[in-house]
Image 1 (cartoon, rainbow, N blue to C red):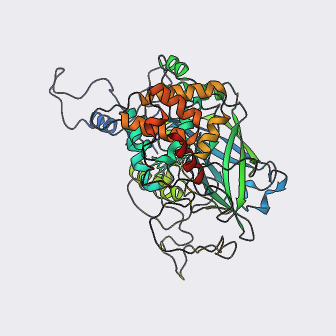
Image 2 (cartoon, helix red, strand yellow):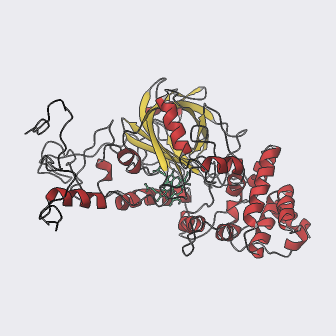
Length: 527
Ligand code: HEM
């Protein structure tokens, strides 16, 4: 290898020499090659053409959601326990075994709706995605800062995102479009009550919780399964902002949350979160008034106490935004042995969507990029080629055998750790039906009642401010939903909009919803 680093150095200047990507020294980075000093330019000007054409391709498509974000690195340290029980009773996932066991992590925090350079003070869920580089390969826990979501079936995801994103004609994020969709989607009430409260604008990334939102499973060494939900609790405390706080910050800084996190790590004030897990037996739980696979619901803590399983510390910033923040790729399909999917209808859709978008957004070999590699596990596949492949995965002892099975070498399959059958027996006909226990209002009302006075005031104010920009029919339907969730909420939002319960008493339930007996009783009281 010829090292051009010292060629032509000026005395006293020991900086290394600029080259192009072919390794050629660049002799003039200020002037194009031209015929005479004043032009015209020549076409064989390799350095100039390489430089400009690479620049033309500097951006990859931004994420279709969660485009603005920031990534940090650190470790997860296991307690070896689920509360006061040994964790291996419930999961055999290696990263959780043994007190003090450490696993490298990468965490990307994000906003959802805005583009790559948008404001971090937006009223918007925040992404909280964690990649664990475990010895069994990578595990991604792709969560948000709010415990629930707008919808419970993945088929509605493009619609909810279109409603929340700017108008395709005016390019304005428009409350009329947002609440048009939400008013026809009653399962969104629980999320809306959270999002329009102060929780909808976290103070920054260090002071927010994280939730897996969807229901997953744990599998133990005997193949026994349990349903689980994950929560990250910040040791720094939870802090939120009002609309006014947010406006003040946004006036001078669009990226305050990224800056706050980066600067804290630079100061060696490493932020820390504890991971808590709620658990229930792996069945339908007919005794509950909600479905444990419904991501618009939380699991009541008194019945399903969240128990600590470990802590996470972030202690390193990205060395380059593009390599480690833009190209990092998370997905709900990325699980390790001992962790599994549930039949949550959002989770299955998400699991397809993430790697699909990453093949488009980053390229088919996105898993070869250092930040995405399973760096603490061996990767041996027969996958080959594709755009931008820069290495061949280890195919075993015979480079000619890039297929399986073979008696001449190559790779072999692993043995299942337990018999390949687990979980309850499921029967049913193929159908398109909503789940039976939708119960869209109860937890929304409970959440409202649990808020402090100032939080309720803020929620009502934000609802009224946004709904004031909506058509009357949308306002009426939203007041109707609020009344079904909680009298005080409905009355106060209605008052702000000049709509009484009598004004909305004529509205019929939506075709897309099933009311509970309690909902019907409330409805009967409206008139
Ligand atoms: C990012 C799809 C629901 C959390 C994304 C991306 C897609 C997507 C396509 C962009 C990924 C990329 O470009 O790398 C979906 C679908 C959903 C869904 C189809 C519903 C069916 C959710 C829910 C949560 C969530 C319920 C929270 C638990 C995230 C996070 C990111 C993300 C945190 C950003 C990951 C990163 O920082 O790179 N989602 N999503 N998503 N989603 Fe979802």
